[in-house]
Image (cartoon, rainbow, N blue to C red; front, side):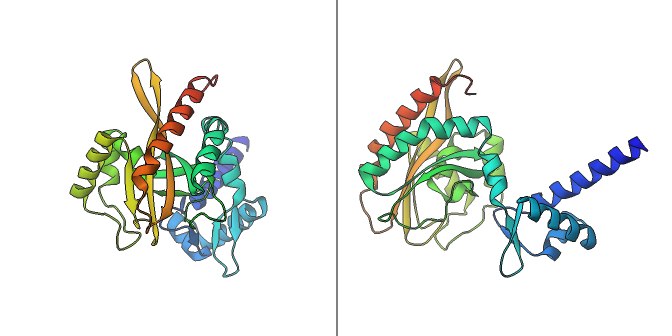
Length: 258
């Protein structure tokens, strides 16, 4: 009986995780039927588990009846030691950049084939952006993502460029062009995009590098988003580079940061 109960528990857990795993960048909101189909869960079982996940806060039900990832999961994810420590040491530098520019400033790390936004500072004068703390955007379509991708292992680059998705008419999806862009990012030390993730915006980003015994390691990317009509992205690069160096030094002084 105990063994059977344990097996049942694992099965329920696996199904609940499968429902959560049905969400991705291309599918941030799903109906109950879509959740059941994408996770391979019987509809009746999905209905029961989705109800429990919603009650706990892992999922949130929208007015149109569809579901999206609940804030509680975002909050828990941001408590992961690396992300929490990185946010804590980086926040003063993000505030400095925002004070100097009044633009949206964000910090991202690579999570698989996405850029995970771990911190963002914006104000009334900042251009509206799609990124939020906890959101994930495709690496190839955002400036911070291209910085992270340029420093990623070849296998990650190959996977990210195998079938890049188009977010706007300006998103670069040609793998050959993207590879050229990544080589240029690695050469000049920063990336730029214009309306690739959202219309009306441009962005520039630089790597946050930490010196290790085996050599420098890119641990994050620091970026600014501005209205696309702005023509001073080059002026913002030194501002970001100073802040990125400060974050890198602060990371080295943080005990237990890996």
